[in-house]
Amino acid sequence: MPGIFGAVWGLSGVMILLISAVYRLSIPALEIFNYKLLWYQWVILILNVFFFTFVKGYLGFQRGFSPRVAARARYLKEHTVFINSILAPLFCMGYFKASRKRKIIAVSLTTAIIIMIILVRKLPQPWRGIIDFGVIAGLLWGIVSLIVFGYRAFFKRDFEYSPEVVD
Image (cartoon, rainbow, N blue to C red; front, side):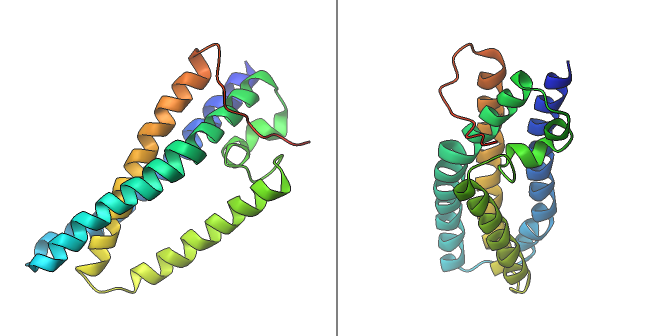
């Protein structure tokens, strides 16, 4: 039972983080509809949504982050360690008990995301909203892919993704 707690907490904690980001970005993203967008701004908005959906959603989440998070949650279910279960969302994202490379990637991506948030917040509307719409599209793809991989990790006998756990 403790292993199930850690696994569920790991997946749901990461999910809460992503859903929270979508919610927080939705407010400035929707503000762009208070502006009369020019034709080229509509084109940039559409291209931006496709770009973020492919790069962040498909390549980032579906091909990398989501299967790894689900695999690490599955690992927690099968290998119960108290501290890993308590810090399950951080464990699932690869901040500890991971290879040096994985930890560097996790910290680097987090740092880059924080810097991008700070920079995008300084943009005037409608440009901020245009970028936020793309980010939301990528995050929504990521949420769906995390649900799918989480389901597979918990309910399928074979789950071919490695949790990349290092002691």
